[in-house]
Figure: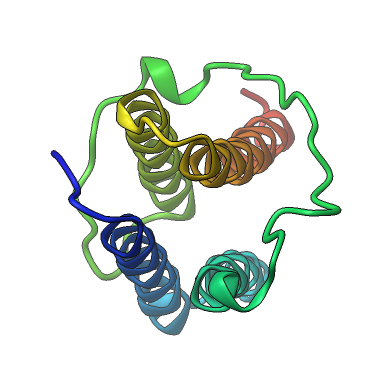
Amino acid sequence: MSFSSYDEIIQFAIEKEIEAAEFYERCATEESFSGARKTLEEMAGEERKHQKMLENIEQSKAPLEGYDWKWIPDIKRSDYMVDLTYEPGMHYTDILRLAMKREENALKLYNELQDKTPEEGQKKIFKMLCQEEAKHKLFLETLYDDYMAAQGD
């Protein structure tokens, strides 16, 4: 995958965030368990925040100024799970597994794009997106672990 301009990179990232938000929104509307629905709505909201941030990135002279850079641990739970395809009525744990894999794949994609991007400003955008996806992945993996522990697993 190659991009000929900074605008193409940003547009690609926006499209990925829209796709992720729509996935979580679709899952939330079809989820009957209110706790799961709330979690999915929150994830959709996070993806929409990323979308808006990327859409407005050009309006800022220093788009990532003040961003809170942190190391996000990877507990690698999703690394040991198979890819799933969403189906209406999926069990909550399967939705969590699917969401974890989606976030894992997004993190891999943004890492790859960061490595392929020669310009420093663009690298920082992808580094920020990596951190955000890593946060989502950790959140979902922790949620999954807590849920499974509560079930006696």
